[in-house]
Length: 115
Length: 112
Image (cartoon, rainbow over all chains, first blue to last red; front, top):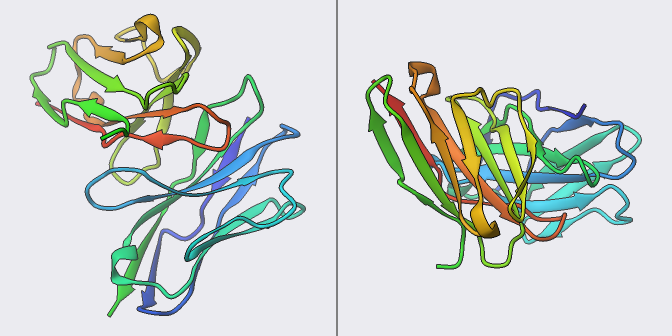
């Protein structure tokens, strides 16, 4: 079984500061992928970034980077230079191997950017 | 727009009625997923299709729920004899590669 844990229900961050959203995971699959999604109040799940378990380098997409520490089973999202539009719910998710392809989500972190 | 499309966006129904939602995945995406999300929670997996084959169903998917994906294109999710506990956002996602999963805007169901 796969499990995602997000321990920060809410975070408040000053605009232009960097923010780290925590995510730890548990799985018995030898190969897996980790995803981060942003969900604004409109409800749509917006894909942000992906990290494969065998990827050698941490994933980056613009202002988003994923701090992947495989031995610690953590996949934290780092947002640099936060903007007011970053205020939203953020979900960490994982997908297992072939035959276990559903995404398992954490409970999310509500990020609020303060002007 | 070439993203995942879900219809309707909102549905209000009386308890006991049947409802059907539609999801049109991104063209050529062979994998399609349905999720349910209640207020303050992360999405919960309901079911998954690869092409037209339904490969996995969650225990959340009671016998009142049924999903189809005829011809491996669009998918429908039907809820029979709706209950107030079915009120939620129903999300559809599609993918072709393992490193992606794109969601639609969801269908918000309210059972009164």
